[in-house]
Image (tube, rainbow, N blue to C red; front, side):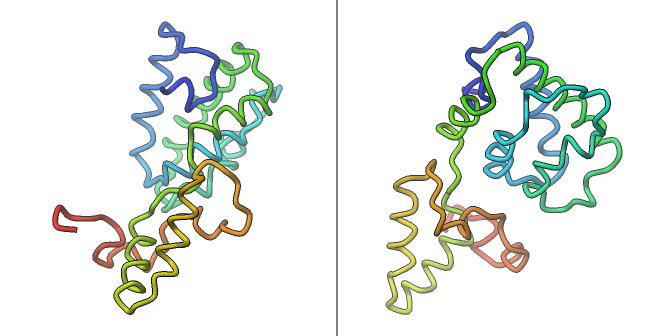
Length: 176
């Protein structure tokens, strides 16, 4: 599964287990929208050369919109992630897959649109007022979660700050 999420032709345990484990350790260290992270990772230029001359911050730039709290990106985090992204690019280059093929492959398994809690809550709020339009719109959107839907970009963004502490928007309880 992870080889598909990361755009590789196959999983090479000798190399990939450590790379995947490191990613799974790094991601929770800063509040990250995982859906956006994988879609943006697909946009990273894995055919780039002279990575030793590229700063860790520059390597992270395509992924910045996936982070909720940029202040959590300490120097240690950026350095650790910089090493990971360099290793990922190196591994991907050895795979020999061109960027466009890898992007298409990744975007087929990493959805752009997911039913975010705050969107579900907004749809519920409208439905309780007798307006099912947002329920219908979300249903149609989620019939094609991997496709670019240019008129629906507002549904492919991080949870807004106002939803962080509103019941039903940030996380759902068992009774939700």
